[in-house]
Every structure is written in C-alpha cells, then in structure tokens.
Picture 1 (cartoon, rainbow, N blue to C red):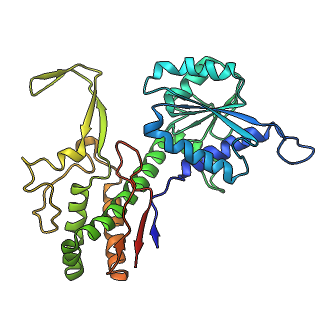
Picture 2 (picture 1 turned 135 degrees about the vertical axis):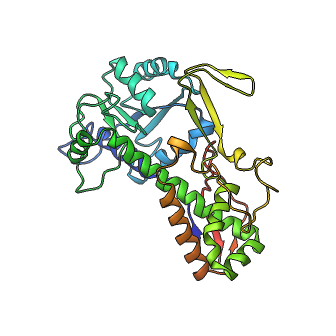
Length: 341
C-alpha cells in the first residue's frame, strides 16, 4: 500500500492540456490526428532545475501519457532564469529565434515578460494566481491573443465566464481560489504524510494516540510544530524596519523561517523531540497576524480526521525506507510514502 504525495499535480495536468490544445492547432484537421512533424516546445523556468526541475519532468511525463513522446514527435528547449526576472526577455528572444512552436513560462513575471515582448509564438503560462488582475488576459472565458493561462483547473460545468462574474462581485476571487487550492492541498497532504511517517518513527507517540485517541488535537499541533509543512515564506517591508540592530529598508524582501521558529529553544523545551504531551503553545505553522493562513482551521480538521481514522483502521504498519523528499525548498513533501500493513 502506498500513501502518495505525488508529482503529477492538477496545475501540471492543466499545463499539459493547454499545451496539447495549442499543439493540436498545428495538426491536420482533415485526418483528425496529430501531424507527423516534431513539435518544439520552449520552457522557461523562473528558478533553476534543482528547485523546480521535477515540474518539468512531470510535464514531460504528462505529455507522454497524452501521446507526445520526446524525441519522436516532440522536443524541449529548456532555459532557466535562475531567479532573475530581468532575464525573461533575453530567454524569450532566444527561444523565439529557435522558432519553437510554443513557449511555457511559469509565474506572473514570466507571463508578463512574454506579453511585453509582443512575440507571436503561442505562450502557455502556469501558476499565475490572478491573470485578469495582472492584465495578462481580457477574459477568463475568452483569453484571446497569444497567451493561454492555466492558473486555474476548472472542472466541466464550471465555466470561466462564471468565475469572471464572481470576480466582478468579489475582488481578487481568482487569486483567492488558487490560494485556497494550494493551501488546502499541498500543505494538508504534507501534514498527513509527515504524520504517518513520524508515528512510525516514534512508536512511543503512536502508542499514546492509540491508547488516548482524545489527544488527537494536541498531536496535530505538535506535528505541525515539529515538521512544519511550509518551512519558510517571504514578506515585503512597507517601511524601514529595524530588528536586532539591522535596518531593513522599505521594499526589502524578508525570508521568514517558520520551521526554524517552531524549533526555537528559547520558546520550546527540547524542541527537537516529538512530544504529544507537550504543553500547548501557539506555533507559526500557519503564520501570524493578518497573514494567518485562511485554511488553518480546515487543515487542522482534515489532519485530525485523517490520522485518527487511519490509526483506527491501521493500528499496526511500517513505513518502507528510504524515502525521498520533493526538492522544494519551502514545502516538506514526500514523492511517495509506501507502507507495509
């Protein structure tokens, strides 16, 4: 049995479908099948292959599942911005000169650069939370132009036009929907998978939950503290801020190490010990203040139900080691979590 964290995300599926739709415009409509030509796909990653290369592999696998085999009827030209947004125009120009059939870019910065460049090559962008707000498209129902977005995976029966009408009623609802999806899926599956692994690694704590299932609330809070799903995030200062003798200028980017804060020895006794009997204290797994995670209560509820039900049905299990983490710097996710019953 396997509890899978998964590489093949909904957003990746949406990118594949958007890309396939673009490629199929080059196919022969008379024969109703793909052309014999080899399609050239340009891909621009916002960071490096070390941090987001697994998304490219998932894209390759997804297209392969849909009949686009690398080296047979599709090839990839990959470029990495290495975290420098100013490199997008240069990389876009490079791929345009190579005459690729379509360009895939990730994030708002890449999509905006593609729009400003005025290129005619079709562009598929992913992971943009508010394409209307950024001015990338004129309509979710009819994007138009050469930009095709896959920021939202909208199921059949829930048309883009409805989302657009909702957006007019509730400002920034598109971004909020994507935020809820990301916050309610990746982080919660991280909590559940990490919890199952840690209960296997710490049989004394598993015994406590088996003996006292009413401690599930304390257990979830301790798991969130001990193995924080979102390890770090970032904020932008609105004014000059001085902390511990260091002044951060207005507009500066600040990395918030949530995982480290949740193991701060000045706040937690024996912070590197998993202890379900620990005195309850407020942790930073869901952030703090006005940026407190909107889905926090739901994540807690899902975690309690999932782990409690799992232990009731599978009180004895073993995790199959070694395990592999997804190479994402801010999320604690496993590629998969195989267990033996």
